[in-house]
Image (cartoon, rainbow, N blue to C red; front, side, top):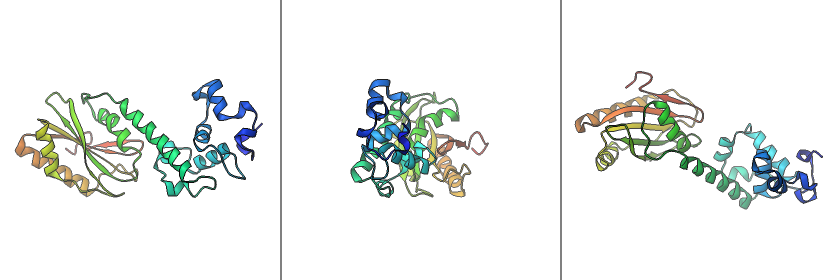
Length: 232
């Protein structure tokens, strides 16, 4: 039976075709993304099963779960059979997954390369639809003492308060900083504003003997390092 094209509810399918029963009998890893999503939304609509509806939603975003996590309630409500409660269930499940991923990041790691910074910050910034500016505060061994979001803005930029950065740096007795922000557009090209804020923070750090080691721009799939490209 091909349940992707079925117009029957999950309860009407054979037991082997039901996502919930399949999860119990065969394990969570045997389920497709559409089947997992079908469990969250519970039912489809008069014309589609929950799996078929889930498959269509995923197809609209090229089966990219990062794109799914960016969808808000209003966007999910556009699909017949998806109400507010179902939208909230999907969004909450994806947020739990994101937080679980964050907990896998080693606490207070040592930074040895730009890729280490990407590993730490990508779970925080990679799938955002707006820009956020973060700073990693390091000691003299390049161990991360803390990481803080400095500002959050729109899709094309955010305002950075230099005084706040150095206030936090002094609180943690940090002697080095790594700047990080995301580009929701997916572009890895630093803007004029990106270059200027890097220059301003470096200049401010000189008076306090606090080094700015790098500025990392993060997108959904990749990153750009000012230091690696000789821009520091």
